[in-house]
Length: 514
Figure 1 (cartoon, rainbow, N blue to C red):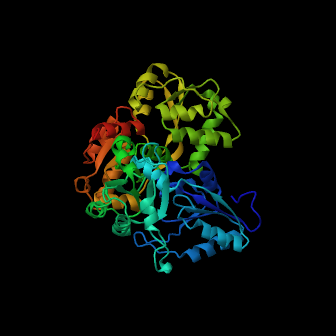
Figure 2 (figure 1 turned 90 degrees about the vertical axis):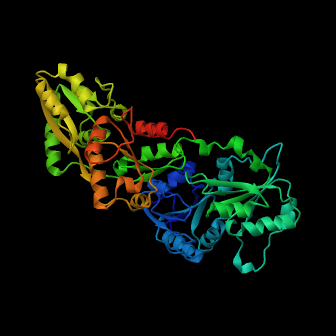
Figure 3 (figure 1 turned 45 degrees about the vertical axis):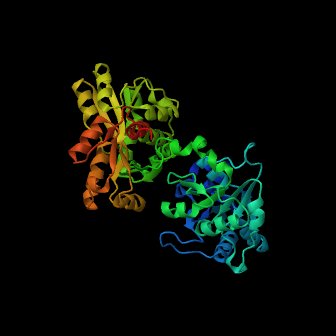
């Protein structure tokens, strides 16, 4: 995993993680996260980015969050040096940009003094993203031709402020204060006292680029009181200038369909990434709350599977009902030294676009795909074609009886082989459970009958109720809806298209425009 170009003393990469939206990480940053032996990330980094990492990840924040330990900057510097001297590839992942009020230059200086090789990977600084996600154009031909970035939290050892408020008050453009929320009243008063009109538009942007983003606008005279009334908390930025008046016309981010909604993803952890990305793209907050886990076949199951693979030319049909089945089947086929040519003349049936896409990655275009993504629909299509034919179904350890019953009734011979195992997750993710307990998980997506039943059982296990949590439920299909209702759950919406994208679309339709 160590960088091929690193020396025996390793190398440190100071990487800007961007302001919060995981989609704003640079390509270089993503590449390094995937290759790093160890990732030391600060408290402003979106945890979703850590899904890109394959090495050790450790939080090293300089400010306290949820009772976690504060790590002094000197300790972080020493740790970077120590890890590099162990010959490891280290990513120091920092919110925003490493050198814009991020103390990255201090870390670089410590590395240089220790003789450790390092590289700086710029990130989108918080102010840039905050302005654009809030609808402010800091520079505008008709409003401002300059922008100043200022720290609102100076080095406490200085004693007195080194900010020239007279110069800032006279600055001919937009002024943006980082880390100044706790001093917003002082900042506004100093600007007014030094000649800035009290009617100057001003705003605070909280949790910029995230679904929790909040923006309070006012003037220098009112902003401190407006912020206090709104209960804003760090991380926040203060914006002073006429650009604040552009917000009503340019606030695009908060107009996305799922803005501000926490949405639980109940599918297996390794299947959640695409769904999480879709939710983020709609300004929602993905919450990983897997109800099942997926693992490969056992030794006995592998033996049965490989025996079936040896007889592939004797089968007339292969059925695939999940992307997991496709990936595990062809993975085992390749491990046995075979490829798609081993399928012989067998025809292939598949349920749903995700399964079709998975097959196409192995050069297979299915012969039959039902219009609706249900086992009942596939059974109806296959029934006239399987009489006297041999059918192989690589599937999960837990499946419904719809296909076996239909194929047997139609005169076909079905052989099932388990290519992966579905197991219930008894311990829910702490983040998802906490949101449920607080009544802050707005939606749960249920994507199979087994997941629906597991969610209902989990609520009982944790002594929770759906009504008490205030969570709404979106079901992927009529079969899942029936299972959920049978388990005592209330289903608020059902997807017309039986995919996770269909679930999100159904939630959007329910929520509707503001």
